[in-house]
Length: 268
Length: 127
Image (cartoon, rainbow over all chains, first blue to last red; front, side, top):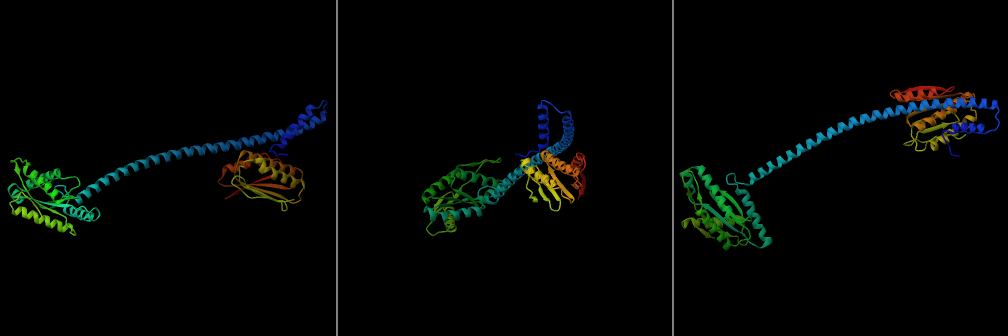
């Protein structure tokens, strides 16, 4: 038989049902049963009272826990919002830092005045280009440029104009070379261009174009416009040669151009 | 009469009925999935034991951390069986243990004691 927590209660109800079903009832028997019934009923409602109290307390506890939980949830939500705001600030800070780092990197690689590559970075590019030849088999050429009589510009118009001339010059050169070509300032008024996978014949054409562009461009000053010219040496990388050696040969060619009257291109 | 020893589980208390020495205890949490399945055999064993009219003192220690409403009814059935046994001449006591910080468990014990006529129901405060 299945056990039930209400076995006792059930039995008394069954007994009552049996008594009612009887055609003739013994009053004595009814009285005795009623005493049992009252006793059981009293116990029953006492138990009920007890259970209701227990139940109420548990419900109260539940309600309290629920309220606490709601407060905690609110706190957590607030914390989450705070954290989100912190995160966003952090993301902004990181982005700002990245921009600064990028700026620093550019500053480290670029000439402060003209913004073209500085000597150090330019020489790194040159070494990379020389190494690349082993893989591609295609040699680069080097163009050495030196602004003619730049000292005179400085002496005559001052250093501010000298700076302006240098910036003008780099703008002109940049507009005359390809994107893959590397342009750098080697010092003073001396500049270099690395032309990857380019023969000296083609490099000469480029150099000649640059020379002509520089000659024909005017630098507009408040005191009157001035013109400049440039002497150029071109060299193609030879077998077993280093970047340094290539540069020295281009430099020598540039000196020949100077000696031959400036505003010229000479090939090494 | 065989002793009843039930190890505690997540939803049921530890039960240790040492009938030889008259030391019975229920300890822990009680919210069994099926109250009748868990408490039925315990109630039957207790009833059979008390019917043997033990002539030693019967001490029942109850130390609950939590119980649900059905388990409360089962506990009341246990107390009723004990109560009736006392009325039949057996010496028995129930000791209701509650932690001094647990007001609710203390009040539950007091509620249960009101339901009892002859059984000695002791409240025992623990640390």
